[in-house]
Length: 205
Image (tube, rainbow, N blue to C red; front, side, top):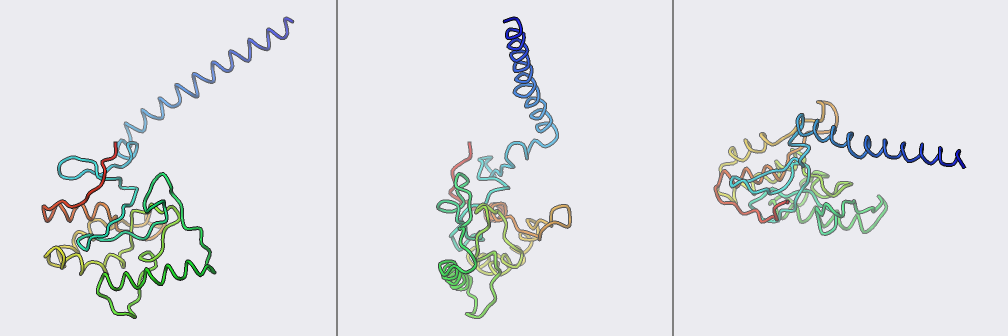
């Protein structure tokens, strides 16, 4: 009986100690370091408009359909860019459904941007990312949309080019991946430039 009580006492003490360390001290230290060293990233890399209202995250894409905005790449996350349903289409390279969807996306992209029927289209303009939440498009994709956005907003192409360049991010660590243009930040910058905010997104609590 004494051995059982001893084992139980050891188990209870070990559980209590580990609970304090793993459920209290460790999270508190990590939280404190994150808030001190990387406060913006630790709080979701949120993006605010000129009024201070949160309009999204640097890490999450959004769907844009107006000709006044740069359009994000297609998304298969829920109804599009639903962070609670992050996923790709899971359609394989031999899928006819995928081939038909891409063909339609190519036709729509060319029509939206006033391109010829044989104009090459960047892959990211017509295919979704694995997460469905990618906030970036390629510089080539942005370049083909630039004329449409400039015309719709009555801006000089050079003005829009400067903004595209400003929100173009290089590869991670300088070598991993390809350059990308953050669409959410670029579109908010366009609104600030024109002083005509049109983005209708729910604020993130």
